[in-house]
Length: 395
Image (cartoon, rainbow, N blue to C red; front, side, top):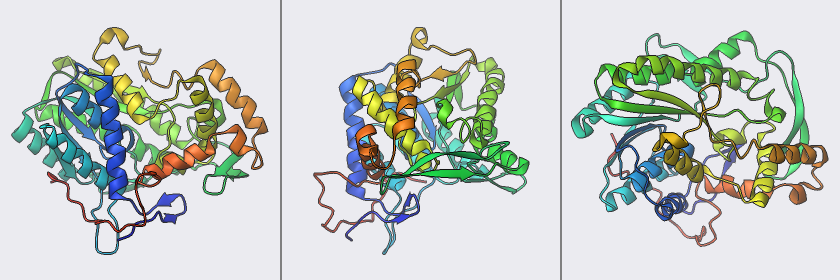
């Protein structure tokens, strides 16, 4: 079929297999060119098909020579529909890993379910014995409690009072004012239930009880703080409450892992173009300004650059700098005072008329399309391709 991008709101409903493979190849090439990291050798990545999770799997494999198991929740193609981008990413990663003679297998299922956890543990026991690193990189609009069956839904809302600020439609570059009503107490609690640390702890508890964690095993979950501009809708909003719970969970896990000399960390990462971030009001405009400034200073990073730096640091405790709350701060370049002061200055000036001049909105849009395999100049999107791509070792 001929595959073009199609949208439902800010969600791209199609993906291009050749473009997704190119995205994976570019990340692998980056890691190979950067060099070897003496890191973990048996790695579980929960949420491994896109973004930071995919970058973690690529870095583990091609920088440290690790065997990896990835937990994903993706859809294969049908006669009239493409697979999801995460499906194509996983297929490409596994193919390329196995061509280089690395172990790589995937579990396709809801990471929140007991069934997926049990299948993953069975695979670890059968093929790897034990693992020494668990990456938790899950974002979801809903979660089903594996014990009660209760369904929780996450929302992106401020807390306490309405929030009003600028936002941009990155399809047409129009800037407008948006106002969002505050969340109810129930919406706050439900968002924490989905995006907090509950499921991360369930995973680690079950892995520990099943005796599949090596002595000294580490687990890392990814988080975000961001600047004051986005505080009301993010860090001080419903998602922020969930991230606070995630970070508090790390402290509980450190206690639980003490008997195996294990460690739980939260890595606060940089703002990036993702399917999730594109749906958050204000954030696409902020990232567009941030990208312009950081590229100008030569300090910009994408997913793979961030994760390669993280893995380089965790392989050497002397380079692992934590903040006063025990978090790794990979957002250090984003949050530099000179970067943030320039963003604040531009924020007051930016409008529909000057957004191309003051921001990297065109770069933002290009990066968004690349998430789904579109926008590569050396791919002819007028040519038919086979949308049916198999993942070599998926359970």
